[in-house]
Image 1 (cartoon, rainbow, N blue to C red):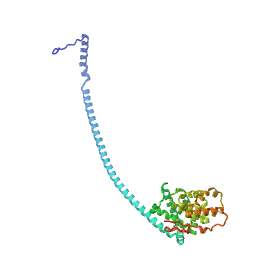
Image 2: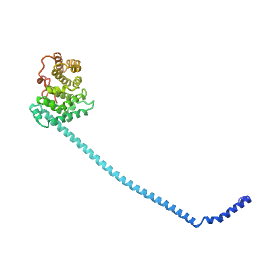
Image 3: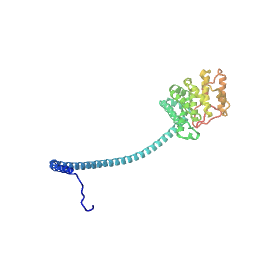
Image 4: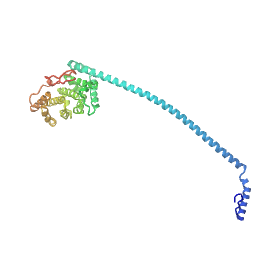
Length: 348
């Protein structure tokens, strides 16, 4: 059939119907599709075009605005980053300066307190110190410094011999030595017993905080200070009122350092001798087994002190030693232990 016309068979009725519809469309279409409608269609198309262009322009403006804000934010971020680097460098410099100042202040405090410790070995110097109006503030500062130092130590930290050269350690030991020397003078222990009770409470509290085998030198100086204060009647009355003192002494007697045990034992002797008899509390907390064990110690002074304590306990009603003959002598940071003076401690 290629190249020839194609024919489709249609029913006459259907053809007449199609012809009628075409004629109707020719008649009514011009009435519907008038000029106004065509104009409206053109206007609608133009409006759509304008709207599309407007939306594109708005999107372009929004994009340009956001790009401007992004550029500004990036510039601000870069500026803040540079400022942060400058501030960080300044912070490092400040920290370094602060560290240097702290080291300088600690060194100065250690040197000053060591000198004052040495000076306070003289009774006249202690009297001059107590006559100054700043002595109360000094003792308050000393107690706070000791408390801060002890609380800053970890449980495993020990104040070994090689650590004694640090400025911080020298500073703390010197403060404790000054307190001990003040308590070694009659007017000094009376002052501590009446006007520095918070300091005495702090010393007792810190002795209970420090773990066995740690800070032995500091423990010894604190125990010496408490012992010297206990020679005063007022001091003994106040110290003995501490509910944890006897359990504390029993705990300190278990310390592995012989000097700590020695001065804990001396403080116990002071309490026992001044009581004039064994109270119920003393009987409850008296570590007789440990004292018997210490009486066989290789530490000569400790062994003798334990024996003396056992003798005092066995003859508690006998004539007691005069209190003033039992005080710790004033300590100097460069003094040495003498064989004929078991009450003296080496403070280096």
